[in-house]
View 1 (cartoon, rainbow, N blue to C red):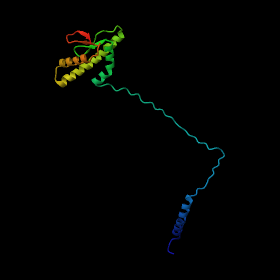
View 2: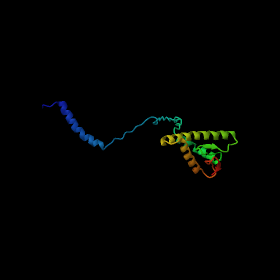
View 3: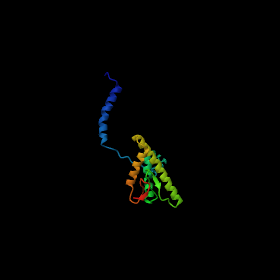
View 4: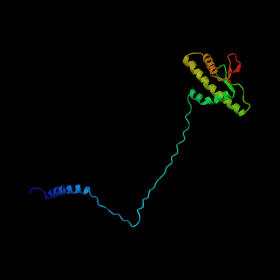
Length: 163
């Protein structure tokens, strides 16, 4: 016999073990576990609440965005008949409020809107290579046409009337 006895016994064991494994798959022994006390399971849970970081609102950069943000305030002042569209394409206070705080608010809104309108007119004059006065006249006409009934408008001759 020229084979190693260890190799022969491994071969024989492997050949014998295969049928045992196949037979043992179908049978599972029952294991009884007995403990002197009931089984206790400890579960630890952590709750982590993350609050969102407060982010400052992004600054409004463009004239169009600033005007859009202010549109409601301008319209409220027009509806209250405090301000109107003047003949130069800007807002004017036509009937100043008696309340000093409300008058200051109206003045602030008019100044901000007029500052942005001037920036808009200057940009249009530059891109269209036209005189600033011509651009202002065109916008003034648009604002008068878009005004709602009852709002103050200034006619080209300088007189104020309610549309």
